[in-house]
Amino acid sequence: MNKIPTSRPAVTEEMIEAMSDALRNERMVLGESVFKFEDEFARFIGTDYAISVSSGTDALILSLLALNVRGKEVVTTPLSFIATANAIVHAGATPVFADSSPQDYNLDPREIRVGKDTAAVMPVHLFGYPSQMDEIREAAGEKVKIIEDACQAHGATYRGRKVGAIGDVGCFSFYPTKNMTVGGDGGMVTTNDKRLADDIRKLRDCGRTSRYIHDVFGFTSRLNTANAAVGRVQLRHLNDWNERRRGIARRYSERLKDVEEVRLPPMGGRDITPVFHLFVVQTDDRDELAKHLLANGIETGVHYPVPIHLQPVYRDAFGFSQGSYPESERQSGRLLSLPIFPAMTDEDVDRVCDSIIEHYGGKE
Ligand SMILES: Cc1ncc(COP(=O)(O)O)c(C=O)c1O
Image 1 (cartoon, rainbow, N blue to C red):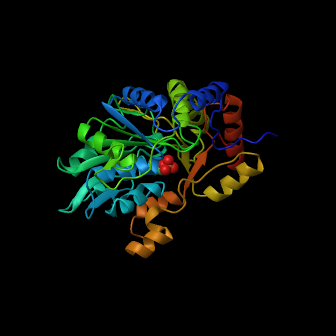
Image 2 (image 1 turned 90 degrees about the vertical axis):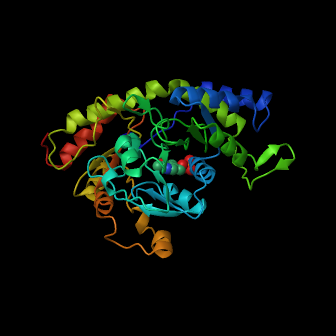
Image 3 (image 1 turned 30 degrees about the horizontal axis):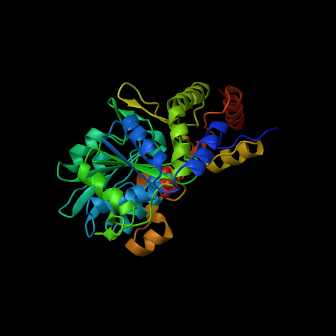
């Protein structure tokens, strides 16, 4: 019985050739492929600027620094990868959590509290499902900046616009499990604000204004040229890959719709086109189901078993405790990520569904 992994990044001859070509013919750092990838990514998302960086985390940190949040508060969700909140701390601000929504797992706009120290709100388009951006903008008000953590949502759309082009800044990760990768770590910032784009470009390159002159405390946070060359190839496939992910999600939903014990994720609609970075279901017996699937050669994941505020480092630094954000705590105990990746076959999806149906006693 072959194993079905939770995710599998594509590695093709085209990617390998693009990478070796860049290594042979371009500067290893800030070579031509970097600028071409940025232009193509900006066009894809629909922003004036895209600035590549060395990870999604750095995309968030440099965006926050460019928005000058030091000493202020930034509101985000406790149900995300820990890097979301870490970026706020690294930028010298205080993370303020607002609970997740029971509807879509994203930051619940009704939970957002804006005070005199709030500099920004950072929604996460978790699992590739766009956050309620209009409601979030309304809750944040016009003065507070919005940073989209789009690290899991390359190509998802909200009311006709790609995520990453809706707030003041969008941040993407190219970590290998994401909907597109650069063959290693990498990230991108998208924005229509020229001043921000220039500042982030400077921050990623040691704070340089020219070769030997530096006027801010910068970082070494560039995307390597060889990785940008891989990113250009991946970007050309992204729409097809996202379409395939949606097809897999539809098949899961259709096959599992009558399994009472399993709550399916939202599928989007007229205003929302998700990209199913993950296909996440909810059940009361998450750990037992995961064990049953593994015994049948099916790997699953949990995103995330511990909400950020309950991680030891956040409990210690900020004094959070159980009960602070009940909805995200409840979801953390119930969420299970089923396998989803573009190369997954319909037969693989059926095998996962058969195994889930068998676990719940054969009812479909
Ligand atoms: C929601 C979210 N934010 C931030 C990150 C950080 O990205 P990276 O791993 O590229 O630093 C990730 C992914 O790892 C993520 O899923």
